[in-house]
Amino acid sequence: MNQPELDHNVYILGAGFSRDAGLPLVNDFLQRMGDCLESDSLQPRGREAIQKVFEFRLKAAAAAYRAQLNVENIEELFSLASALDGQDDSDYIPTAIAATLDTIRRSNPNCRVQTMLLDPQTGQATSLEAVRNDVPLYQLYAEILNGNFCDKPEKAKNTIITFNYDTLLEDGLHGAGLPFTYGIPKPYAIYEQPNCTQHGTGLPIYKLHGSVNWSIDSSSDNRVKVYNSYDYVREREERVFLVPPTWRKVFGEQLGAVWDGAVRALSDATRIVVLGFSMPPTDTHFKYLLIAGLQNNISLRKLLFVNPGLDPERYPLESHRLRENLFSILRLELEDRRLIELLPANTKEFLVTNETQRSIGRNNPSKSVTVTDSYGNRLSDQWQRKS
Image 1 (cartoon, helix red, strand yellow):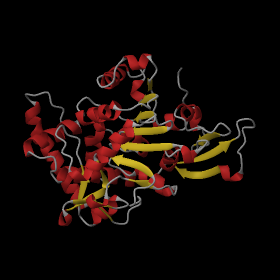
Image 2 (cartoon, rainbow, N blue to C red; image 1 turned 45 degrees about the vertical axis):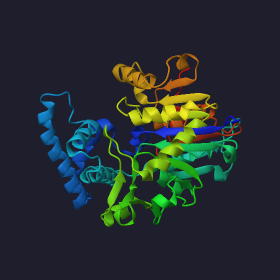
Image 3 (tube, helix red, strand yellow; image 1 turned 90 degrees about the vertical axis):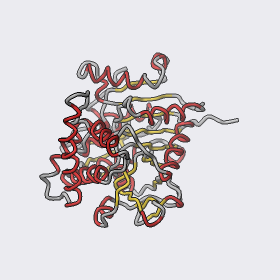
Image 4 (spheres, rainbow, N blue to C red; image 1 turned 90 degrees about the horizontal axis):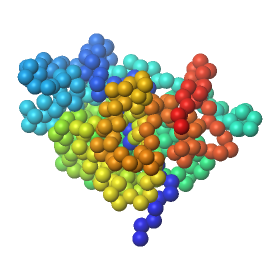
């Protein structure tokens, strides 16, 4: 008989999670891609790929003359490219995506913060070691998601499922000295200078759509090469392993173990936190991934859907759309039973708030975490959850 998991957090991350690093969302990806053409750091191969994307967008305008097609939306544009090419692996599309993310990251300085562990009674730092200056923001996020600030981090189980191609989370974990694994078995992967563990230990990060630091090695049965950054893929002019956002996604056997791991994680999740992902109805793969994971779940206590667009006063249309996306997959009555909670917050507002850490079982009753920016402003005071 299966025993319920008592403390397993599964975080599902979308593009909104990477917004604090200046990376684009789906709705402005093409615009930001075009901006990259003016950057000196854009490599020739990336420039050529981006130019091909915009050449195709110009041709796609003919289809938009008769059909409801938004050629400014990356999902719709690449879906049309997939339908016309008869395949999802046109080399220029993954290359253009990776080059865009790489160029934007190079042009945006890393945001850094200060963290303090405070005694709730005195409001003072618990020790000199409890004050850390100049911490990269995504290292802080990585430590929170890994459970570092909770009462008993060694007993907290955590899993990341992400649709993001970037390595912000992995870079943060590596900077903090925290091990992580991609969940790709060695028969399907070649590990070259990886930051991840090759033996499958550490925080599981299931990247369902590939990653900019992965490439396909055509000389070894199309196994995935795993590097520590996109630099190696770019310098060696290898084919980056990304699954573009299209209606016709094709997942090779290399990603089979990744998707299986994600289903297993969802099947024994105590809490599921959807952060910065809009659950678009066009992504039927995610819908059935979630359904398959929840089918045999006897542990689930809470599903948190976190997105700044859920604020009905500031974003009435977006709030309505996001609710429709969520409840086209899950039953509406789960909200009344408080199994599902909708939170209008961005990544920073959600993760650095002590109240949030309590709600996801990652707080330390004897300490509170305070985060300040470079100007000394307490980030954890900038947002309070509404009851």
